[in-house]
Length: 612
Figure 1 (tube, helix red, strand yellow):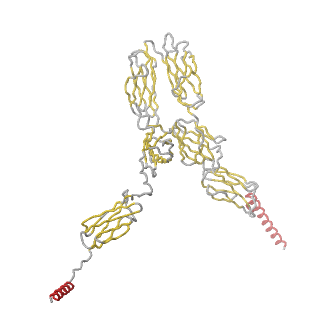
Figure 2 (spheres, rainbow, N blue to C red):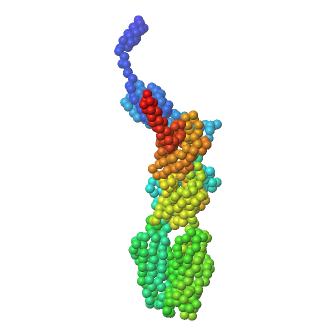
Figure 3 (cartoon, rainbow, N blue to C red):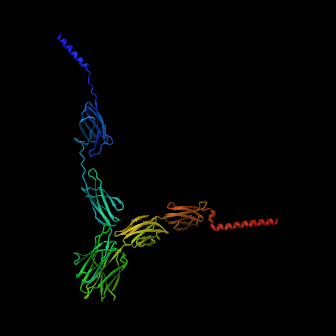
């Protein structure tokens, strides 16, 4: 009985439990977003992202900006979320706890570790040091050699050279390293100012990029003179030290004296006026005194110095003057060297020597002065350079040895070759060289002109048939001549020669009749505002005008005119009607013959009418 009771009780409890309402738990949304990054810090697009948390898992792919976003359905919050990302051989993961609502989780990828048999890890790149060496200051139009090397040595690597100059000048070139990782590059700066040279060596899978920059200051040369009057003085007497500097600048010139040409003592600093200076000096010294004038230069010009000497004695001084005329000559050209002493004494002999570019002295001649103390001689130098001529009066019982100096600049002639459009020498063309004074040259039969030009900048205009056909700028310096085209084509020729090709063209004119047959002996004129050219057709009905400058022209045959433009027109065809072939005089004769025939006909008609 008890058993039945307990069994009924259990069944009742089960029914009560089954009939009791159950609590339903709804899922909770959690939004997870973030970015996936590559090892270098860039955002990883297209990476596979798996997000797990709260019993739910979602997989997505990052966009082009490396961003992902998913929404999990979790049983309850807060919960823990883990994000795993992978792209190629790179993978990474990140997680956060106590997450609810919206959370940002970023993942940074790393290169996956390889197991046995996998490819070995790639070696890390090495940094490269690149250094450049070049003179800090150079003269304009000189050759600048830039040397560089890489450390560690990059063998056979291409190095990009970028050169930047003043006034927006910029150009680039390439050089290759040798087996020691060294390279060279040279160029000639043609204007003054600050130039910047940058060398760039691109990296590869073993080396990083490397670059270096160096700056050079391009200057012009300056020239300084120092004269002493008199060159032999008496102790306590006044001596004038004077000279000029090129360029003509207002600056400070430092004057020094020395007894041994080694240790120098300052006399005074003097100011220039219009580039020249002067100082009255009373030396309380005795013997041979060396003198020096020095200018330290500027940002545009190099400094310069020059020397002279002064003989100071207790005897009566003698003055020796030496000068060369002209002071600048072409190689091989004669120069007149003149000497004067004061006071004159009998049997005075002056020894002449020269030194080229500061090299050892070479004997020229001994000059016996005339009764007025004058002497002169002709001399020529075959090589270009700066020559110092020293004249020394021989020592006598009454006079000490006295020396005086003068400088002669010898330059090579510049040969200018002008070619027409077909490469033939343009004989007879006129060239005008414009600088302080304009010079005009006429080309010889071989199309050349020998230009006697001093170093400097010039404008070159080429004329043909009174028409300007080419303009150029020529910079003549110590290293030769550099020409920039302002309207023409340049050609490379040997040193101190320049080739210019100008735009001249050949124009054929073909004259034919109504049947297409060539017309012989027809006069053809080619006329422009500046010039007029004439020709006569040959048996082929052809006349060719040679070396025609560009421009607008009128071609005239008898009364027929045709307007053309050179170089657009390559050939001119002119058809002449038969009546035009006879010319104006034949037409006039035919006109009078017809008029006479008409008059005769009228007369005959009149006579016939009277008879009737």
